[in-house]
Image (cartoon, rainbow over all chains, first blue to last red; front, side, top):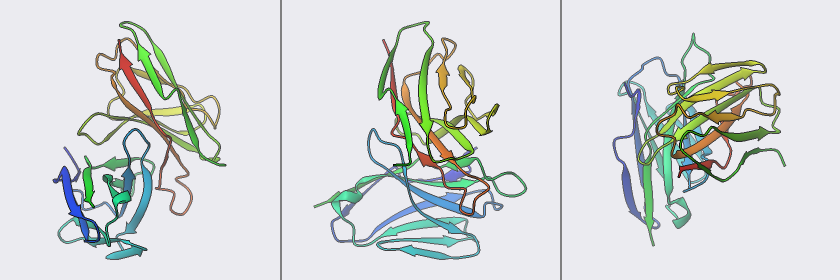
Length: 115
Length: 115
């Protein structure tokens, strides 16, 4: 059972426009979410996170929105740049009362920025 | 520089052979993890360790073994029992007890190919 889902395997966006990557989850107990960015043949790098007590978190060009009632989060990148071309994973740690040491990852969305 | 190193970058395995992938971190993190990534799939957890001399199976532990004799090191052995070992292997670490400790930091990965 895929508890964290990224239903779009790929997305292409013109340079300078907004990229929106989506993630859905099924476990309503998840209370923290992370986004990772991954280039080919490299390890993922942490991008941004959000706690369930917030509905938005912003860091430079990256903003994550959380809609708890819909069990949906999205990552907005604006303006999109060629270096943003990568695979993006959303992830969620085990909710309480379990330890937060395990992350459940989505299957990823490959973002391609078109110059 | 603090970080996670994995070696080798590429590894070739013959049929019936055991191979060991190295993972070292100097971040002073308590927890370490091994993931496997296959094309078009997310990251699947193989094993994780929260403390020295202790480790737990992840979602796909069959055919793999680990040890955690030192805090800095978490080697993964791919045994001959793993029938489909060709994949990209990622090691990560975190400090779950820290604020923001859900964030895992990844090494550069090892690509394992079967001859």
